[in-house]
Image 1 (cartoon, rainbow, N blue to C red):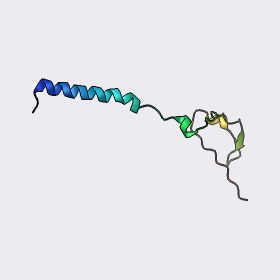
Image 2: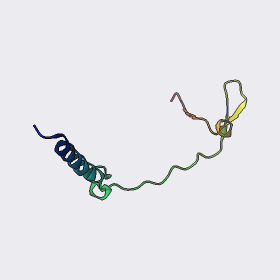
Image 3: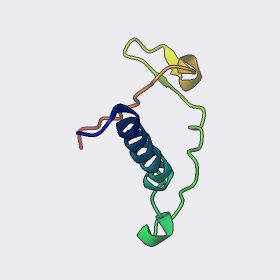
Image 4: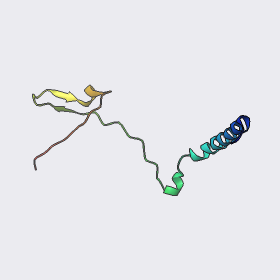
Length: 76
């Protein structure tokens, strides 16, 4: 069994070595090796309005700031 101060020194050294290795392990992926291609940022949808089921016009701008799913359905 090792003495208290020596044991504390060994634990401190091992923790220090582990902490020194963390930045290398936390590095992000090498995107060039994946041959990833950057994409264009999303563009705002064009302004439009459509009638609701009662015939009243509803504009996309009415939903600004809200999560909106626009679903077009047809029967052909």
